[in-house]
Length: 330
Ligand SMILES: [Zn+2]
Image (cartoon, rainbow, N blue to C red; front, side):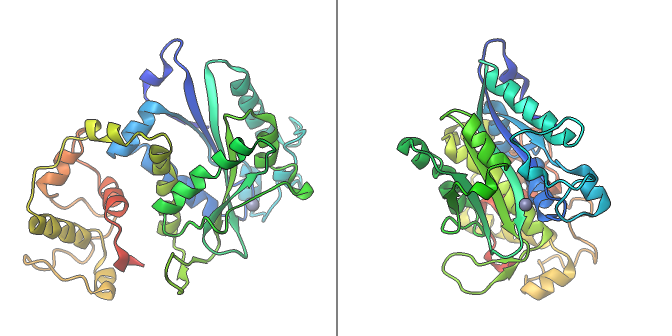
């Protein structure tokens, strides 16, 4: 179980807003781990949005609910042959230990008056649908039912591969033992519970018809977009300004040049050739400037944007992708 927060969040008597995320309950659904990785990478980064999120929320993440199934290379079941996502109603400590442990933890949080469990998101991958989308619950309480549509709607604005129209709310009997259904019934009206699904193969973004094959990076990007959507949900945007040291004022052309240059450094030579990214004035710096290389000299404005010292290349990539979506990279 991974916990992300700033210590201030744990002040004596202060209420903790908790976002609980689980992944890989179905071992064959590998994209689930990449999405989860994207969420984690973003939350621990020095990105101003990530810092604001850590200050206001506590993220609890169980990235792999079915480690034995993953180890064995199973498609859906655990070592003992159980589909764990049908056993939330009554997990056994010896037959479904991870599920049992996580359920105990969630019930403990639910009963703790100082904790408000606001979100439960279980990450899966879907073998026939395209895009990312969510499953939510059906409630008699109209306000609660409407409120749980907000997060997927916001996510749809942030992530080009996430589809609100494929998102659905149901109460099928066959899904009664799933985390989302069980917790939706257990937790009160202040919590939202979802299954986050992402296609095994491709997505179509709004306004286009061509299917774009998913890559590991695209799955991680969806994860980063899930994380930053909490900023919109909790309307924390004004905090980001306070957190970040403003970039020096650059003329628009200068800013464009800086971004172009940076995009250049984030790609391998082959990728750049495929995309037609022009070589900067200084010439080809190296054959091996991909994500794993040592960071090139960063433009000054970028460095000062990250108050906790020079940003890692990973941070930069997130910044680049999050705030300036690069349409050419698909
Ligand atoms: Zn699944």
